[in-house]
Structures are given as structure tokens and as C-alpha cells.
Image 1 (cartoon, helix red, strand yellow):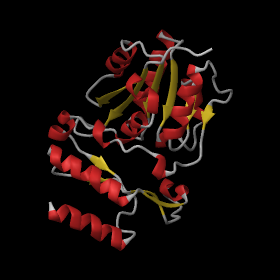
Image 2: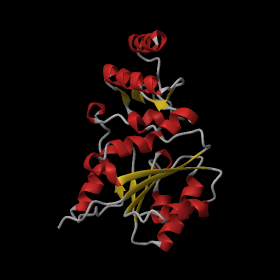
Image 3: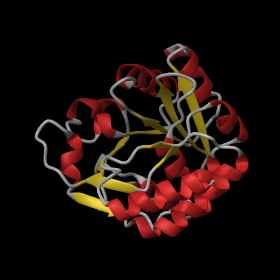
Length: 237
């Protein structure tokens, strides 16, 4: 039996206020019919664990996702402990690069853990939840995303973000190299977003007042023709 649409909260702790969570915006943008049910709650290291947990609990969400990175993992685990101790019925999942590889130690803190890219996995999880179906396994993993199927999230940058925070963008995902010391080597190749669609999104951001773009591509200069096209685009504006 189908349930009512869930209330979803996606949250992370950024290193400082000026940072934005690019990954959470991608997850929200690709929830399709559940996008309007989802709220992004970003915090910075200036907030205490107790303040963050209280703010998230006050949302009374059905599903809470915590995005985990090397700079916030300890605090995120403490937030998860508080949420589950006070609201055990809330479905809580962890995701992000810090929990995507050696994750056994993190499974006791959450109901589910999303490994790797999460756009497909989160959407399918929420859709199944609405049908009253929950996965039997705790670790959720799907094939890497076909970038042509993803909805770009740049419209989710607010006017406040544009005025006061870093605007992250990406034209590619992945890395062509296999350096043993780097997790990016596990992505097995580079995938490109459609360049015309990407630049159209950049044009919209420029119109909205963005002056500085921070690319998160692992190998921005890999394909010279594309780099030249991108740089000429920005130069012309």
C-alpha cells in the first residue's frame, strides 16, 4: 500500500559558512516527483553537534540523510547517534565519500548507507519507501550515473548563496588516472556532461550575478577542446 509522500531532510556540516554542498543539491534535484518533499539543511563547524541534531529533529522528517566528509565525519556520527536515540522511527542514512569505501564501522550509526554516487540510489529508496518496501541490505549501491539522465542542480543555488557563498560546478566526473594514493582512481574513467547544456546553466548563473565559479572536476584540463570552449565562454562574458 502506498504511503503519503515522505518528508526528506538532507544535511551536511560544511567546513565554513562560505561553502555550499554541491552533492546535496544534486540529490534533491534528482528526486523527481519527491523533490518538493525534500529540504536541504546545511550547517558549519561553528554549530555544535547538539544544535545540529536539535534542528534536524525539529523538522520531524521521515527520512534524514547525512553527507559525510573527512572534515565532518566525527560530528556527523554524533548527530546520527542523537537522532536515532531520540527518534528511532526516523529512517537515517549516511552517504558521501568518507563512508563509501571502508564503511563497516559506520553501519551501526544508520539504517542505511549509500555507497558512491547517490542520485539513483536515493530516488529508488524513496520511491520504494512510498510503496511500503524497504531494502533488506543496509548498503545501497547502484551503477554510476549516466550524466545525460541527471537534472543539473544549479537552480537550487539561492540568491543568498550567490551573494555570499562559493558556487561549485562540474563539467565532468571521474579521473583517467590510477594513482594508488587517491580515491578518485576508483571511478574508472571520465564522464562528460553535455557541454552545451552545462554552459547554458552557467549563463543563467552569470545572469543571476555569479562572478566566481569553482570547478570540482578531477581533471579539468583533460580535453583541450572542451577547456578552450569553456574558457572562451567565460571570457566572452
